[in-house]
Length: 455
Image (cartoon, rainbow, N blue to C red; front, side, top):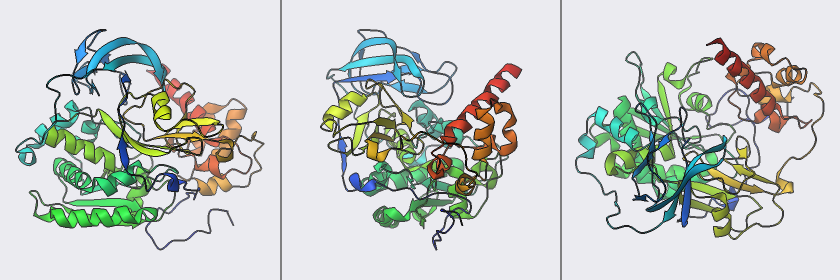
């Protein structure tokens, strides 16, 4: 029997694979969100999927909080000044995923007439195209990490038959608790933001999925839904909260759709193909801010955690806040830090430059000690099958890794590599400590190169 197949639960969950890593959420789950505003921010222009934005400001320009400072040519998303101040520079700087990117650095300086982003009259009765325009203008992207432009996800094909909105409150990555705190502290904004999305996509049914290790958040969301009377809104939306099993990767779209609706997203398909649209709780809040308050995405909540930081926190910070400033604000290192991650330990990315800045998609910043990481050298595959049982997509990571090791990446499609969403369950489960998810990434990159050459 597989190490991971024994676990049974009466709670809704997905049917295939998954793992139960140590949660480590106790470091921050009871810590309220704090606001931290640094004196300098550096905003990379590449913050969402697609082409990078082009700067619209130059050195020495004065900007106010919320001003457009960069935009994607041809009508793409814009970036906004997260603080008021003077543009210190527009030059190449570090980026968490691209290594380097054009970066706009702003030195904070108070300005008269800073916008307060007050509630706009009549926001609930706006036409759907107007709501979408506001979401686009605000630069809203998927704040769960994907950073896909939200307005594009909500512009459904004419033949789409969607009946359900799923709001993802799973936050299944270990350590991360920012979405949990948002649901506890800002539940009204989550619910109203969900209503905005439901109105845009034209559905009457909204299900909020929350893992069983976040019961207080589930209770709070239910109270808020009842207090706001969502079925009396125009349009009426029936909202419910479903508590799922705590199992990684419960927060992945395809897995969460099955857990909450019983529908299986087909291979190569999207939740849209089974009548569902999925959005993260923080994205729902950003949609409300955009539609109700005309507030762009200029800040976000993230979790700062790990045994390697003295004072773990849930922080609300401006986009562009540096890792170094966050370290100083949280009291500095606590012992020897061997790895710094943007995101969670399963899908996050290692960073090596403390000048790297928080982007719209940064949900966590982890400072891990040796005891929290796996630094063992990897060994040959022993054909135990643990990765096969752990993979929620039913792929064959072991076979992919073997083909990569002999430089045959373009022969791995037979093992389902293109369906991999890099959750990390295979690497976590491997007793030989093989970096299986990295092997999958290498194979996927080879196919992308092949596709580009064919164009």
